[in-house]
Image (cartoon, rainbow over all chains, first blue to last red; front, side, top):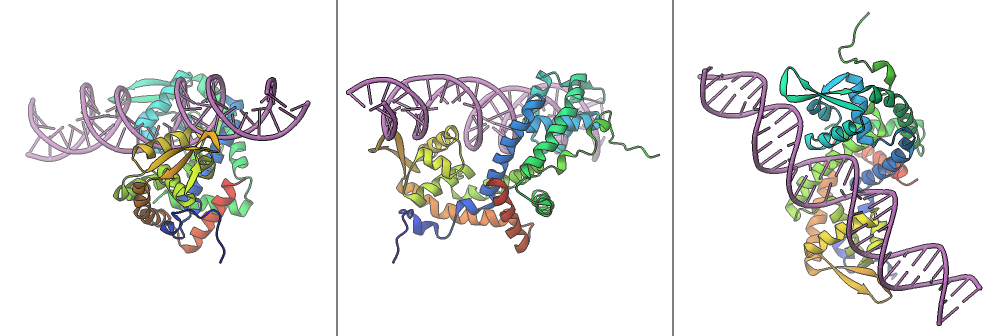
Length: 154
Length: 154
DNA sequence: GTCCGATCGTTTGCATACCTATGATCCTCT
DNA sequence: AGAGGATCATAGGTATGCAAACGATCGGAC
C-alpha cells in the first residue's frame, strides 16, 4: 500500500478531478503565454496592448466605425471598448467625431499617427502569432485554430 | 472590377492580416465563452469565480500550502493570488495561519465551510467543462486539450 | 556572527473584462 | 404627434492579471 506524499485531507472529496487538466485552466495558461509574448513583441511598435491593437486594426480596416459596432466586431463589452478607445485616443492614434446620423453614437477614425503606427504593429503581430504557435507544427496549428474557432463561436 | 463595401482607407496597409483569425483573438473568444459558462454554472455553488475555485481546490487537494507556492501551482502572479486568497478568506472558505518554519510565509488551510463548498463546486466544474467542450466531439476534445497543453507549457 | 542576494507577502498603478444603472437619443407602433 | 421599447455611450463596482517597488525574513558565503 503506497501513500501519496501530495495527498491531503481533501483528496477523497475531489475524486479524480484535476484542475490543471480542465479546458478553462489550459485556456488561461495559453492566454497568459500569448499575452507575455505579445507584450514583449509589441514593445518595439509603440507598446500597444493586444486589445488596443485589435481595435486600432479594425478601425483602420473599416475606415470609420461606431464605438459600439467596433466592440461587437472585436468581441469587447461596451464598457470595455470604451476604455480601450479612450486610451487609443489619449495616445493620439484615434479620433472621435460626432455621427451625423445618430447623435448618441461616436464615430471612430484613425489619425495619421494611427495609420503610421498600424503597419509596423501588424508586422509585429505576425511575428507574435508565429512565436505563440512555435510549439506546434503546421498541421497542429491549423487544427488548433479550427478547434478554437469552433469552441469560441457557439 | 468589384469594390468591397467594407474596404476602408487602410485596407492596403493591412495586407492579408485578419485579426479575427489570429491565435490571440481566438483564445480570447474561447476564454470569454468559458468564463460566461463558468459564471452561470457556478452560480448554483456559491458563485465562486474560476480563479477562486482553482485556488480553493488546490488548497483542499494539498491540505495546506504556502500562498506563494499556491500561486505557482495555479499559474497566478503573487500579486494576483494575494487578492484571490483574500477574497476566499473573506468568504470564510480559507484560513491563514503562520508558518512555524518561515515567518515570512502564510500557510493556507481550508475551513470546514471551505471543505463543504468544494464537493458541490467540483460537481459544477465538471458540468462546466462539459458545457464548454459541447461544440466538440470526443476526438476533438482530446485534440484540443493536447494542443493547449503543448501551447501553454513552453 | 554578519553581510548579501534571494524569497515571501504586500501595495500601487495600469489594463482588461463584465455587470448594473443611467441619461440621451433613436425608432416603431399607434 | 406621442408613447414606449431599444440602442449608444458612460459611470461605478468587482475581479483578474502583471510590473515594479517595498519591508521583512531567510539562507548561504565569508
